[in-house]
Length: 399
Image (cartoon, rainbow, N blue to C red; front, side):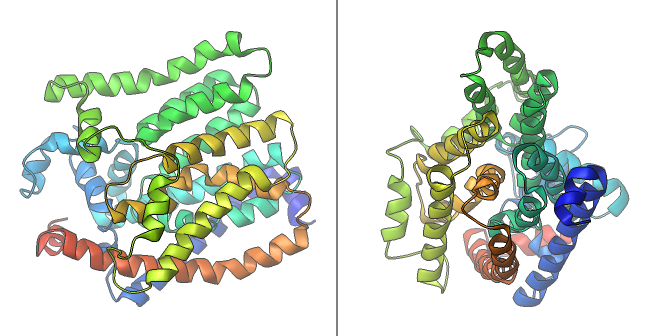
């Protein structure tokens, strides 16, 4: 029995195999990152936003409250409301077994990342005749997706919700899809975009009026979170306030303006590999654009959902006003939101043979590992400069 036959005839067995395949890749990448940087895995768990999620997890069962007591470097716990609580909740749940906050963050991310790949296999069966190929690619591509499913990032929890919501939507299970879309908004603030994605995907089917009210109820989770902020901080808009402070003004501008500015900038916040990073950002942008407008993926309802999904994610993020170069280098991470749709559109392109895609995918695995190793090494050096001297050392010893 071929892999494609296994994916179609024994979906549960294939999903389990996809989970183990994705988990093995993430464990292998973590080992490579430790060897490449010379840093302990616990230290790598703290870079990027990892330390923020861990501190929120340490504040459970009252998320965000008392963080200044956990780590005195912070004086205002409301600052952390900009990071939604689903991934920190997963860290807290795993910590009951792992007994170590940093290791719990890594384990939660890798388990959720692998679960996202398993859920992706179910979505792939609905939208492509090559679900095994699509799942193989999505386990490690794009490279930023592999990285975010290895270290302490919210993206694995976020994509689990998005992928499951899309699959339930195509199955006609609107209440389930709406609930999962609501969880996506709680997992990551940009998850609120997925409700318009699903509404846009059904706009031509004549049933928008009947189905849309169910999806507006998916915003109840955000309303409950706002009520919690009102009770704890006397500010229901605490999360919005934190984000507005980060952008300092209207956050949008002409699409691709910040990307172009970053590509043309003569400096970067990292040391070394100046042109390599710019080439990677340009390649990432090119991949998503090609998947959206260049891939021949058909005109059926599934293709429409994938295109609306990727189009909304791409347009939103390329229109953000980036106030510093570090934000420009985060573009690939922002676009992970559209990665499942992009990979599925590529898998549906009948011009690309299965043999060619399997071969190209296998060749991309070591490339993805190399890209992520370079990125993490640079990120470690950056955060050491960006935060006060001794911050990460004291945080690592405390957690």
